Each structure stands twice: as structure tokens, then as C-alpha cells.
Length: 329
Image (cartoon, rainbow, N blue to C red; front, side, top):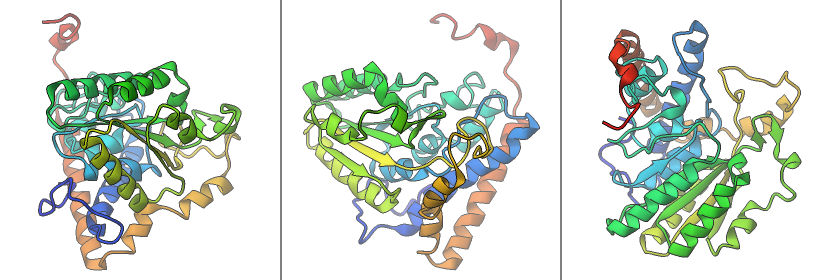
């Protein structure tokens, strides 16, 4: 399991009493899964592109820690961390990457289209910004059903340049929908830096004009993110409408693929060095007992090995699957 079953997800925590071991487990789990994916990828066993979130794990882990199991999340093609943090099956994720029938989407979607009805992970989208109105619609459904659930919608800085972003903010604020918007700002839309795309970097200021409360986390601090998420979720559940968090982090691998890309000229290693020094996995690893950390690490490796074995031994989809889901049954 990703989380300690003795401490229910959604338990109110703060930087003073947060369960560091639990957050470390979440961060390390995502990090080691993605490092393993990067190691496997050159073998061509993985049949889809992969967009790794190494360096950006803290946003998903922190937010999902304060959500209830019944809440929903919506993510993008860089969605491994969100899928895993919300409780999605690792076996299902890897089998999906392998194009196997045991995958989360039956082997048809690949890495960019992870989905889990059991964990309430809405299907991810490979088209920039398109998950935002879908998540907003899901939040409208939650409000109409009066079921107390909320939706956490994750997207990158590039998505904020799409018209659907502004339209969704306005609609969510107008209808006071139960949705938390989380922008994972890594400063690049593929290879284009934020400085070449935004007239100002005051994203929270722009969002605030819709009457939505905003928070900026500008140093990749998982404990600050946890506190901000808790406050936002509490406000949303109280019926105050949407909230927005801009979480600044840095992807340490290339836009798509398993490698680093500092030799391509659009960004440089000295820029990454600042963020490597803030690495939340390393930070939290030093805050827990070494024996407990060793147990957590060993348990994670065992789970990853089992998931890889499952993916490699699962059968390919039957030929008949080509004709399913083409039209409504």
C-alpha cells in the first residue's frame, strides 16, 4: 500500500504534526516507480510515450494525502504521480504501459491515459488543457448530487494559456463548485520557457480576479503544499467554492522520455541544480528513522518487482478488443 492504513487518508495534518514517514513513502514510491520505468523504457517493452514527473512528485502526494478516497482527481499526460498518489493500481499502470490486457485501460491508452474507477482517477488526457473543463463538469455533478465530494484538477503552466482554463475558472467561481485547481508550474511548455510566453508571472493574481482564493508555493516544499491543500480542501468542503494553488517545481527529465535533456540548449544544468538541492524525497528521507526508511524502501522495491512481473506476464489484448469501445454498446 502507498499509505499507512493506520492513519486514514484525509487526516488533518500540519507541518508541526505531519506524519513524515507517510509522506516520504508517497514521494519515494512515485520516484522509484518512475526511475524503474526509465530503466525499462529503452528495452521497447513499454509501448507508449512516457512523461515522467521526477522532481514534481510533491504536489500530487501532498494533495492526495488530504483528500478522501471518495473524492476525484483529474490529471494530464504527466500523470503517473497523481494516479499512484490517489491509490491507482501500480500493476494496472505498468501493464497499461506494456499494452497488456491487464492494464488500467485494457492496454489501449498507454501512459498518457491512466484511469481508475476504483481510486476515482478520471481518465487523463494527452491534449493540453482538456482535462480542466472535464474536471469542472465533474465538480458540477458533485454539487448537484450534494454528496460532499470534491474534485482536484491538476495541470501544467502551459494549460493556463488555453481558453478552457479561463472559461472553467469563471464557471467554477460563478457556480461555487467544489473543485481545487492545482497548477504544476515547471516553467516550460515542452521546450518553451515561461518567460517567452507570459507577459507577467503573476498567475495567482490573474486567477484571483475571478474571486477564487489562491496560494503560491514557490520552493517545492511538500509540507507547505500539504498545509495549503488542507486549508483549500477544508474551505471547499465548507461550501465556499473553488480554490487555486500554484505549485512551482522542476522536471528533471526530458519533456517526453526517460533521459535528461540539458544538452539540447533550451535549459541548463545549473538551473536544475537549484531544484536538486530542494529535492523533497531526499529531504524527508533525512527526517525519519533510518531503520524505518529501510523498511519502507524495501517494501516499495518488492511492490515494483511484482508489478513488473505482472506487466510482463499479462497477455496481450484479444483481437476482438479492436472493435470494442468504438461505438457505444
